[in-house]
Amino acid sequence: MSDDFQQAYLKEIGVQTPISSFVTEEKEATREAIPSEASTYAKPIIEAASEVAEPVMQASHAEVDVPPTQTAAADGLAGLKIKAEACKACELVESRNQLVFGDGNEHADLLFIAEAPGRDEDLAGKPFVGVTGVLFERMLAAIGISRDDVYMMHGVKCRPQHNRDPKPDEFAACEPFLTAQLAHVQPQVICMLGRVVAQSLLKTDASLTELRQGRFSYRGIPVLVIDHPSYLIRAQQNKRRAWQDLLRLQSFLQTIH
Image (cartoon, rainbow, N blue to C red; front, side):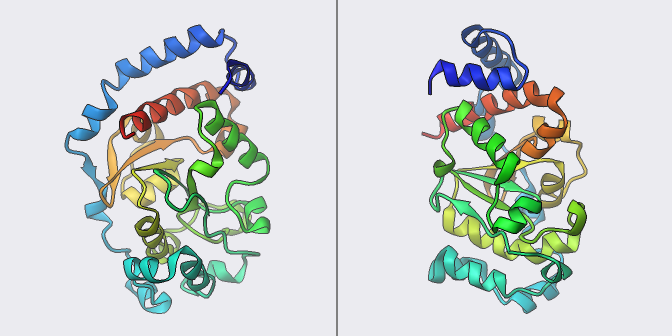
């Protein structure tokens, strides 16, 4: 990616420092805060997966009737999406316009999970569209990643009315589909976007600051937590912090290739 593109992105997020010195400065700061992504994740990770091996609502399993791993292997994501569209395990099916199942590279090393679809996504039936999608793609491009390189989905597949936070039972109802998607894609890194999805899937009440700085895993896969792009649109003052998180993500991805 060209310096011109990165410079334009950094200017947009409020970083006025020349690109060469800023990137060097931020990377060095990131390395100090995170000694070595390879060594960090080689150490024992907080195994959130052991705490979330099964969704809370057992009734949801019976209603959706989805054996996650077997379904992913037998039908692929297309077949799994059909099953998800027929799911009536929670009330969100009554108010949604479209299921927002997932999108992107089905064999990506990097997988993003946000909390639930917003209005634009609910109308399009696709994650990360509209203004939020544009910012998300620019964020990826700033560290040399294309939307086509990653897989994107939500912890909850249907939009909650008035963009409220999803309820625990709604996350539980969708978790069999989420785990089946993971079984198909088999990413090497999960990036959770925002506090709500991270707290829900990792079963923690940690603050966003603690989540951004912590080490976690979900079902044995390393997890990084960063701000959701929609939050950055509302809180422009945190876009510099987001750039630091992106460099952290980039640094870790370089250790797995």
